[in-house]
Amino acid sequence: MIAQPQIKSPFALSPIAGQIQVFTCVHRNFFTTVLAQALRHAGQGTAVLIIQFFKGGIDQGPHNPTHLSQNLDWVRCRLPDSINGAPEQAEERSAILELWEFAQDAIEGGRYEQVILDELSLAIFHGVIAEAEVQALLDHRPPHVDVIFLGQHMPTAIIQAADQVTNLRNLFNIPLEERPLGQVALKNLNIPPSDLPLEWLEPQIASCPSTPLAPAPRSPVSLSNVVPMRSKTVRPQPETKPEQGLNLLQSRPQATECWVLPGQLQIPGID
Image 1: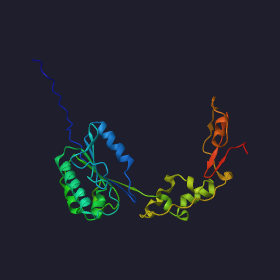
Image 2: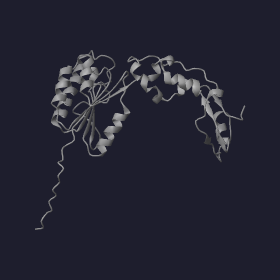
Image 3: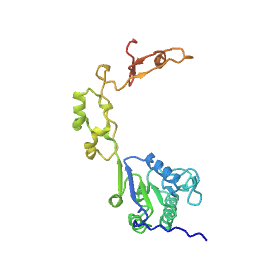
Image 4: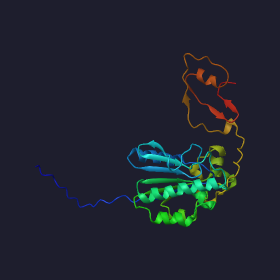
């Protein structure tokens, strides 16, 4: 028998501790970044489970999950349609509670290393699931399990317990006069408000309202005060004849600076 080498390392290996992540916003949507993260982890061998408490319509339920990949399972509530608003019908509340029991078993069992709970916060907000039950589940979950919460009306206790919180807000609801960096850009760079980089408005995020509002109206912009960011070389298409409208772009060789504004198309040299 060949003796097997023994490796003695001074570094002790410990499992990675699971995290609690929160993604919340003022409107209902599924964060594409979370889905991309789930697909990436599943591709690397991590068992991932996505549970959508207020989405239905495809006859799923806990006993009929969809296997998106080898390590990624997706479950919706067993309803003929999604739940819009408060779940007032007994069938809707029963479907949400059924998913909640399934989620508890999945997290406590430790089979999945990442569990995404979409719009569980709405179930707490409408009184279908007690917030204390969710907090108890987080306190007693296996240490290697990541739990990700998505949705509106996220409870404060869950946000405070989270290791990472992402709050998506509409920055353009902030009045222009309350954006000091935006005023500097307007005066010195001649950039229209609609083209301001969002990074310049980061100091104003705290003052952004948490309720959805109508988008701010766009200021009228003339071509004379627009700063061209780059120029493109438009190569002619051999089998395309120049026609009206946007096809004129295909007939101009060499470098041409173009600005396309809402409701108009302006190309230097073309009337």
